[in-house]
Figure 1 (cartoon, rainbow, N blue to C red):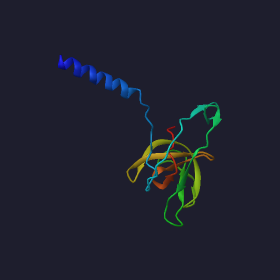
Figure 2: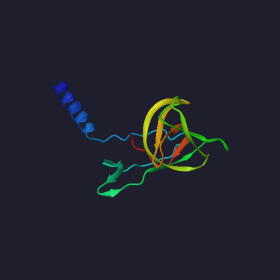
Figure 3: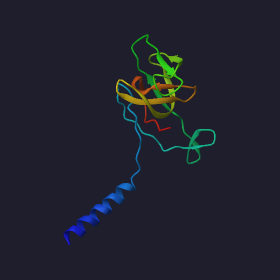
Figure 4: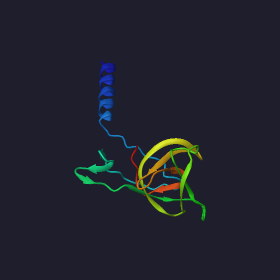
Length: 133
């Protein structure tokens, strides 16, 4: 009798946990910043929409040593070619997070919102949680 009661309790707990939504959070670089992300749904043109209204992209600051630019790459990894550079301390829109080659142990990369390219999450301080691509 006790085994059946325990098993039923475990099944109920697993079912309840399956109902809880998971939120993907990327490491925001050398500095941690608590953030929040309103669930966005992409329609057609790639503009996130929540309940009929447009959502601004997350923003992040390039965190590199002074006068050292952050490389913007054509894909999420250090083997992709450098297509642009961002100045230290500059703030940019972040469309989404993906995984790629590790930079100082961090495999996360941000796709930029208003220009082509990806930047390593190790060198970007996101002001809020960035959704997965």
